Image (cartoon, rainbow, N blue to C red):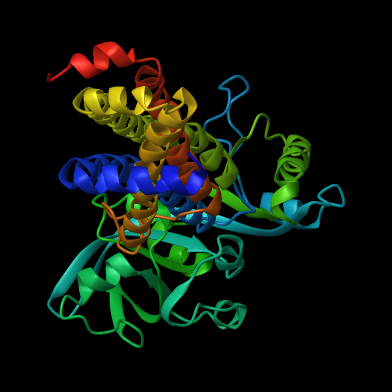
Length: 396
């Protein structure tokens, strides 16, 4: 039989067993669709985590000495350490530096009140941490020089103080009894989401006013600096270590977003592998279904196979027809599976927006064809090797 005759015979056979063909296609659709969708969910999760980590500032490095070795005792960080990190010629890969003091206070506006985490810092902090505004503006160096009672709050604090949904920008709040004008509202970061529930939100204010009205004139809580680029974060850490060591601060502790990304990288890789394995099992199950259907088809068509062999049909032609039938089912199922996955990727799954890449689609489509060839070969070979005499006796 020529290829056209083989294709025609395969089509007639599939159409004659339409219900079985549809169920076989459905198994392949589930397998291929699962592979693409679950891998896309893994890609979306990875992107979501990377975006949230990036929101902390790709080049930001937090410096602390209170967690260092107790022998010698920890060296408290001071404003002069900030100045040294910002101006020392050794810090060629250190860009901006900002001091940080931490405190907490009750914040009141009208009938609403909240327990806030207070962060005293400089305007450079917002650049270092890549802070994004929802509304208003950040406080500036001009506000610091003129000792303006200004503050920037996060979205959590705004929703706590203004439950009616109104904007906090331009409103005056009382922080530990001292008035402060809200100039801006920050969008949530990964750190905010992680600390959700620990306080009613965070307020940022010029460090001088925080020390004067809330925290007192003590040592700094920590320092945050930015490297000149994400690629020079390690170099900036090394230079900061040397600068602080010359001032008596030995073994400082550093935290940067790349450390969090590295820590989460293994988890994301494991998650993606797990999702891919689960999807792969679905694809294998679909392939086994194709084998089962084709074996049943061979059994039901045993007498037909005997007649065709008695009339001179070659084993290659018989085998080719069954392989062609299995491959056709897999191709149709694979195509529909890709379509189902593309539709599913338009909607968030468990809060994650799936991201489909072309390589995954190509791999899944290729696997669907391979399933037809691989899992259709055994039934085809079985049909081709059938003894025509014994086959003709079936059903006689």
